[in-house]
Length: 365
Image (cartoon, rainbow, N blue to C red; front, side, top):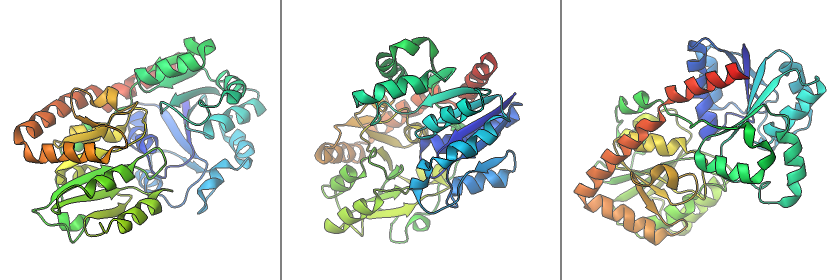
């Protein structure tokens, strides 16, 4: 059985990091698996996967322009590769559409599986997309939802395909997180002192995320509270501009994409995820497994995972977020209980459980 993972890129984000973490494990389990990317710009995740030398990494286009993922030429390029695999496991749009069209061109020889990673997208919000969506989804053998919430949403959205949906939670390599050692704070940012209270958010800079609320909350917190934002993307410049407008340059730091996330998590005092919506956030699971208190926005895709373990705050409300952070930093008993609850919750999302379920799904298809 040969499986091809297909995704727009391995630039930054949860689905992208998930493939970097899981492909070695699939290979170890005896699944012959490769990966195809529509676009690459010397990304760290791609380089890390190539260094492992365990699979073929197929890149359709190398360029500096992210919008190249939408090039229709990918459909013709993709069809040449699909015929070499039994199953294509697809992630995100436009890979979701282009793979179907490429497979039609080769007579549907490859079995297709698609994973829904988010609770919403721009297409699901527009009724005129439904005809196109029904056509695309009809060509997938199975539709994997990474949470119960996503499954409920898409079953209502596309009831004709209810029998195709299956739920497989994304997972995290918990051992990597729990065994990581902290690094020197000065290695993260030279001006961060050991006496500072260090907040950390790991997420791409996209409209889906809400780093701006977190930055605004920083203006309501004491001067010894500092924030490190890990990641990159299209909204980073807007966030940097906001930091400058609020004169927070000495307390809010942008460190770009990092490959030492487990060690960063262990170095922080609080892990946060301010977001407008999620699917099943790997960053939230990593944060809860880290041994640090975790705070997240009360939105679809986070509420389900975090409620009863970490601390939730009202989405887009910097004052509420600042209050939650202050309370955790001042109340040691609350902090320690939150850590214990988070670590217990994270155990439900071990990556090995996900791997086993996906392999069973591949065999059934």
